Image 1: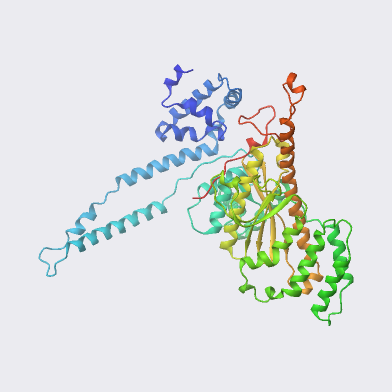
Image 2 (image 1 turned 90 degrees about the vertical axis):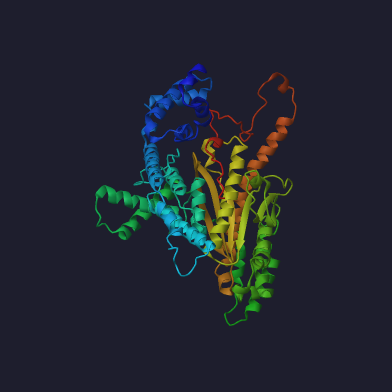
Length: 558
């Protein structure tokens, strides 16, 4: 095999063995080999030759993969992704040749076009400035020409095998391709969706302008127009049924979040509130004082650590003694909302759970290992081992601004993917269980709180979905209509999601302690027992594939 390497124009076999798991090594094989469009046939021949040599490899996984590609008659070389790649290569070469042929002889006369007999002498510095200005103007025109020309499309293919009817590629391929071909912009919303696509994440709840769902909707409509060759078809009128179809299929195939369940304890406290409502003519303060006294007196069965009692009392106290925060929200700062509204609720809901809220802008060690220095307003840590990965994170803002919302959401999503990847990479979690692991985070804007989860559903495809929304009650009427209960139910669900993540870490810790313990069986038996979540090896196991094979590296915006 070593002698046959001389038949290649570059170390193709070595590269392919190290990269075959990434989209079958395509189009990276042709990019790394530096094949231009004229040498496309040479590149494909060398790829096929490398596959033949791979079947003889001692790496069973590599050999099996190569045999599979050959058995399918090298169909990967003729899929849409590769056709698009070679079209882009050709378009790039043509454009580059045009640019090479473009000369700037007209720039030179600009410095000598002033007659020597001119009555007003032109200083040398001025002619230099004219020359510089002309060059800049022509350079800007050249750049504008290049930008307005057809830009090369970056090809990308994911193997997630999730499809929406009408879209001629998988969801993972679509969002990844769209992100790689998106223009570089400073607008936070566009940056957010680019970050999602580059990380293989689909936001199934955002269908606003510029979202991934809207892009899919437009792509399906464009494909329909092309197929029907009907330029009279009204785009807007055809968008609505398409997006409904997209949402229907996404909900059916991808979403697993359930409605926020009602806490039995909160229901009982809510009944106390309703049973002790005063006539509307009575003063608010009197009503609040009665509720405060009633809630304190009644200990509800199931509220062992007085979590829910504390939550109800805290909201009532804010209305009694700190209602000024409701009067002029424009005066409130972000920390006003954190300290006066949300921190006590979060602290109470996690009481005696083994999880401790950690406040203020801090950076997680897990995120640092991925090269990110994201500071987060809230991190949910293990009460004993605070160096262990966060069980969840949260971001707070004072006002509902699109810029701030998407900035915070981008931070939260990146941080959550880093934590989810860490969990999956450090544990042997079977593929049939991975989609059930939902890593949570909170977004809080003013008096509104939203819970989200991120999960891995297929190779390279992560799903971001909302777990629910609640609004902190700011009036007596909202309290009467169940406002406190709604907030408690959502925070309760968020707490339960965190406890599920904690259970994986606890089981891993227990398995680690057990495996460290020496036994007599360990002397004679090679199999010391394994946990279903023991640390995973770096090489994939073909017979028992684990979630680590579906994860994709974290992409970070510059």
